[in-house]
Length: 95
Image 1 (cartoon, rainbow, N blue to C red):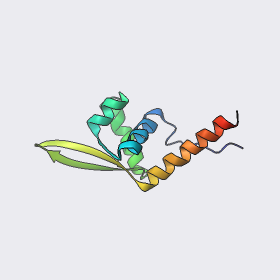
Image 2: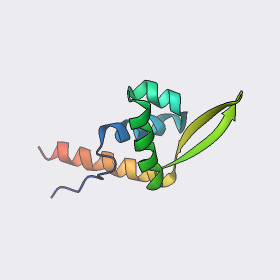
Image 3: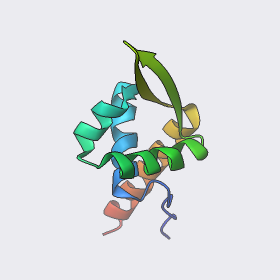
């Protein structure tokens, strides 16, 4: 039997953001935008969805009078990502 995949992580952009945050723990919006190739608007929407699920925490600060947004992965986000990866691996092994 196949496990259900987390629909929140099954989106390519949200999965990309989570994959990046798993490796760096914290990243600013510009870094995520550059690495994912997403538009600012789309990235912002997907970050909001991840934050609402408590998979990430969003910090808004100012640096040299410019707003700066940083994202940090939460324990819940790490657990969800690990379970998603395990589910995908199970799909691969069953073929």
